[in-house]
Length: 274
Image (cartoon, rainbow, N blue to C red):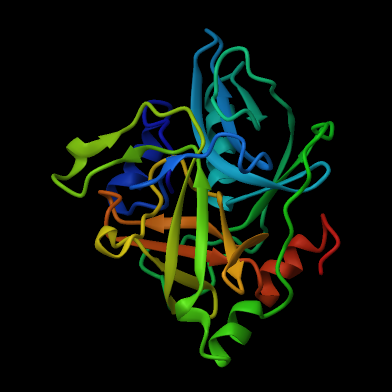
């Protein structure tokens, strides 16, 4: 559950101590205005302090795609901290002067605790925020057709396919050392390219091997997109969203597929599917 609001609830801290779901960008670079439809979920305290929480993608004029472990955590944060605000921004850099949007989040009713279940179960870790207004001037990203990744695997081209991960999470610029190399105060949007390594019914594993030119995600990237490259060109298709990674953000990147029947069944309530 990659997010950076460690101080808000003891429950979240305990969750992270057991297992680390997705984080921020490792070995990447600033995204600038390259992916304007990728935004950040931000929590603003009663004192006005901003915390970058999770990442997501606009997939229709007013629907923001993210992860259920993010929205479920937001329920607890808001319940335990009256006056805290949950906001979404698409600014490349989060500041007190950013343009923020409000909305209503919807956790997947089929979401279940995925600890220890990677590769053996479908966690249903997909959610949306219905924004109260459509952000002007932003073209939404697209969703994949049903079974796109299975089709690529059957054609023996999946493992030569690249993906671009985008997120606002913590940054790691070096493979050396452990936690010490993670910069947890990042507030800007970053991106990185990855190659596919493995595919299961619910998950895709993407490479974070710096030696082969790959990077990955880290704390705060949860819910963020992995845009698939087709015929060697990056598309605006969100083939998976960030969910799980290793605690030090330098080894593994397992992401929840958006082309499966279960993911599409949830998304069909909120958007028109391809």
